[in-house]
Length: 303
Picture 1 (tube, helix red, strand yellow):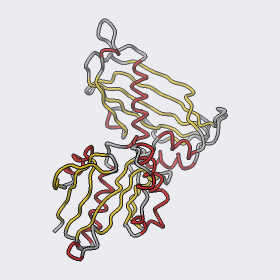
Picture 2: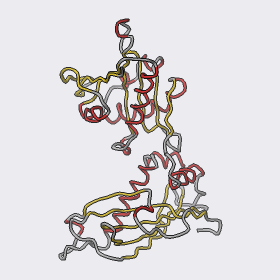
Picture 3: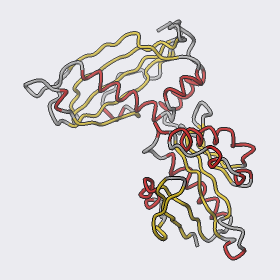
Picture 4: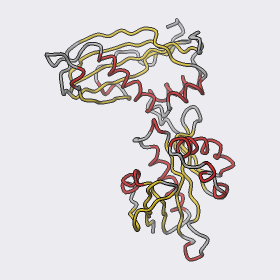
């Protein structure tokens, strides 16, 4: 770290509550010795698990995020201190935070707990560098994301609007999820309805769309003019299981409600059925196949 380092935390963490990023896991058989005590090296694996969670909480898919930042973070140094032992089947919590931002480097602090008992602490220094591992200044976008996260701010901006404004980023994610991941033909994924639909996107600190969806009238039939259809719901794969999909869905449902619509409907992939049930949707009819994927029709009454 240089003398110009920006210190984000003046004092060491005293408890798990001092960390905004926390992850939990259970100690597995493969991680312990004959005395059922965790091998020392596995504590660094636990910290790596927390590092992956940190990027998820930044709402940044790591690989694509690094491409946008124009470099990579390379580990320069690690210091690990043991305070107590974790044992087989212990449930451990790992806290991770950025403590300092230097010119080209960033210092992370981690702590591992079992209940309220501190097991280990770690300090890691990463250097931002190009493909040849030559140090480069930390990008301002990365600095801003970390500062906002550690200050407790939201890490995504939710926007609704037209295809002309939001379409480029929305389509990038949709092609990634529906075409490359699920194998849906590109000519089916992109259709003429995008131009007239209302789109919702969640943008992270790198202006990447990490969740999206669209809404349009259910049909041209005048008897169903008060029914809207939500579709093209997608979330970046590394960020699924959080709140992003629900935020996008709620934004579209709220938009329909503000327009005075009576009902919203959608064709849900069966793997996402429970997600929509938790959002207040109910199943209509029997399962069917669409684009080679099992679907179910669902709806939610607004008024």
